[in-house]
Each structure stands twice: as structure tokens, then as C-alpha cells.
Length: 93
Image (spheres, rainbow, N blue to C red):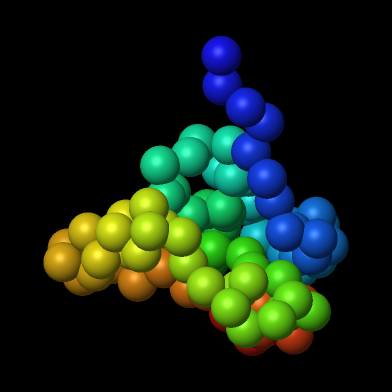
């Protein structure tokens, strides 16, 4: 049986704010295996976003091993995963 995916405390706030700014937001936090938390799209742009809680100590904001490996795999194909730690960073996308 699969456990419920853990999301950072600011995940819902960022997801809602992006939707309010007319991004199409697909919440992919439950996919697991290092897949980024959000897939967002607007005006012909598609981005993958990893949400980390900027209120936590830096060591708690680090990517998991699965996340780091998945981000590296995507980077090898020329795809960037945007890591955001705050609403301000998410709005700057």
C-alpha cells in the first residue's frame, strides 16, 4: 500500500497563487520517485516546479536523493526543474 505523499507547508499557498495568476497547475506531488511537485503552464510555457518550505532550516530544504536524481535526469535532456522556497519565488517564474 502506498503512503500519502508529504508536501511542504507552503505547497497549497503556492499552488493556489499560481492558479490565481492564470497558470494551469497540475499538482503532481503524489507521483513520487522524485517527480517535481507541480507542472505549470501558461502562454505556451510549461514548467516543472519543486516546492520546498523556505521557513525550514536549510538542511530540511535539501532535495531528496530521488528528487536530485530525477532533476539530473531531466537536466540531461535540457529540462530545468525550478525549485522555489517561497511564494515570491514562485510568482517570479
